[in-house]
Length: 148
Image: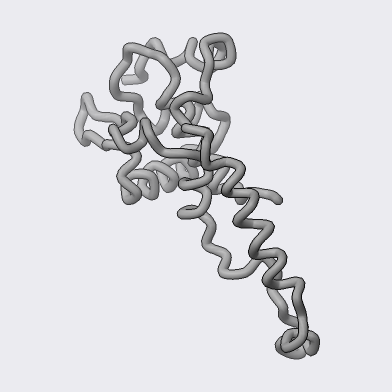
């Protein structure tokens, strides 16, 4: 199973914000630099994560983004389910319309169960517990100074 590029960015943002630092607020621009993703992609991810209640956004000159209490408890499986906008794993379409095998096909429901099993395997993983000191170290070096 493969997650979308948007889900990947959202997970990177969450992990970066969960990493142990004493900075409090971090700007989307700094996050973008640290996770190696364009600023506009990170901005969209932050907006969606805010809609889900996982991050808090403070506007203004000294503003930024931080994990919310709910964000500290969110699991990878929970988040990926909410970010997955596909209704079906398989499109079940041909250039000429619906797949002719659709009525008697068992693959579509099996793929749906497989997707749910994928998410269920990720349900125990709390996002905030994923970044470790040694893993986050090189990434967080740049977070000690905020661009003005």
